[in-house]
Image 1: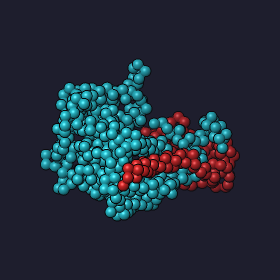
Image 2 (image 1 turned 60 degrees about the horizontal axis):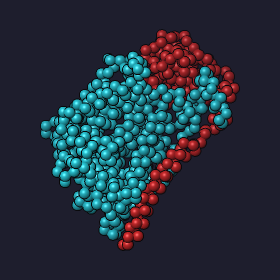
Image 3 (image 1 turned 120 degrees about the vertical axis):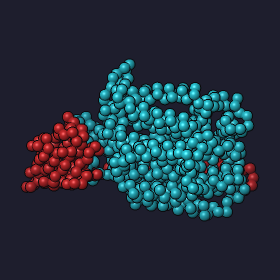
Image 4 (image 1 turned 90 degrees about the horizontal axis):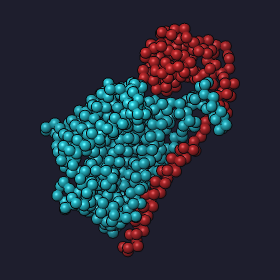
Length: 469
Length: 156
């Protein structure tokens, strides 16, 4: 993370605000959302849905609200992030609506409500949090809160087991996955912790076989994280979150210390945990077996087999290059199509072309987040942006990799696309945090930038700078 | 509706999706290369011209930074070598043996005939008076800049 000298190369120019570009992209994003909704109506009923104006107006209102908030309180923030996630959210709504029509549910209106709540929290986060460095003060508070939240589903009254995983809490009419909030809090906690301790973690240690191994006494935090992840795996039976939290910690540790030794240690711990999990727990073994031999376990929709996975694969295959068209396929065959398996529905109705577009959009989100981390001036912001990018990327890899049978299937939501309130709301908060960091990073320093890198002993840089202009 | 209409709708929606993706990428592209270079950089591209253009020596303008309190009291650095890096690191113009100071803690740099102090993402922060600064802040003769247990100020 010693990018402080490198920052100058990226900061050779002043970032523009680009709010106009953001508005233009938002209009296109609205076309993606409303167009999808209209196409679903045309495909299923043969006519444009009657409430398209109200629906489109609501979506447009949400986007305008988010845009105005960014314009007012984060004028230099990244122009691409907001439209991309708005488009993903709009596409997700259209696909969920399509699945509602196939299965007779009403998830789409609920999802729209959650999106509204998400945008409200997005605006609030931007309004309340004017400087992301404030969060560094809450390092340990955030960490403690995250652990409490992770344990909440284990509590007797409010915790509840759904589909084999104990990750929900029920408070009156509200169902909630506290793990989604814990995710963001953990990024804050890791970032704060690593900024303070990275010197100790990075410099001490021994060199064994070209790899710098860390000191024994510094292994404490990584072991604690490993135990927490294993705990989630054992007690909550949630493979996906367990993988996500451990991967996130490892990633941030590596970025903070620039030492591959940590990755080696982490990978060993992970393989150990994975092998032990496979040996000891039935639910892990089922996942691995159905991943390796899905067609042997395909026996018609009775719980713990590969029915869902194989139906998803059939969907992808049936979709082919350009898909069956929205409303033309049969994505209702896949159980849980609107949450975990939304990519299979997209693959069936929009084909490989649509799936690639969606993957590219996710790629753009991660790229913008990592770029924010690169140009950010303070280490805490750098680590936080990296962590948020990591959460996003890991989660997508785990769920899309699972759906496409690249890795064993684990239950996680596809951010912004799939049905699920806690996930959608927290994804909007993540984007708000990223926009806040990027606003701070791109905001021009008052007339100081030209001299940023002119330290007297940097002759070579100076020559290049002269010849460039 | 006919098969053809459905086919066209399908293609049209995929086109919208990809137009959006390509538009987003083109915005990223213009963001990378199309940014305006500020006037100051264009007229004074490198540090060499910047040195010639150093603040005019008016009467009463500061000439050096001095440590007025803390373990390194008395250490100074001339402002003609701006920007001045302050920290515990060996590359700092003013090296402070203060446990509360980061390796690259803060920087004092000029803009026109004004002087700025900028925190470089230090752990314990840079203070002017009792206020922790979050962005480059103007300082004048005698403004007390606190870094860890050390206090620095501009001197004539």
